[in-house]
Length: 105
Image 1 (cartoon, rainbow, N blue to C red):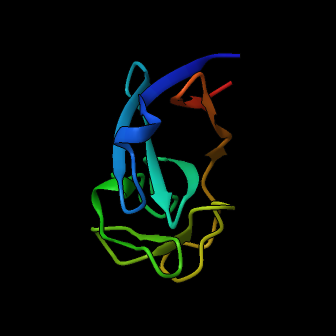
Image 2 (image 1 turned 30 degrees about the vertical axis):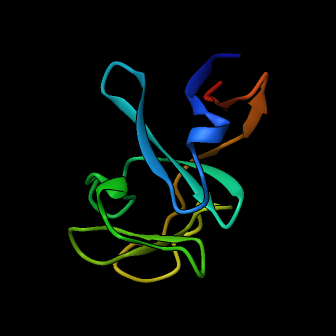
């Protein structure tokens, strides 16, 4: 499985967000929401826009697409508001040897 190093864990506190390259033309947003780590594909299922460039809510662990306002759950990738209705991919995140890593498969 392909793993991507995001950042040293001590440099990625709650409230942090980082966009990482997962392959040619493929990006993943990594979030530390209240101490829980999440990774979600940087693609809105509504129109393939750059999802992770949008705002995110640290209270609810949701990201909002900057194009049309669709909201997605960081933990599950579920589309929570229209115009999106299809989920997006989420990826496992873990801390290995003090480094935040995403498994992009």
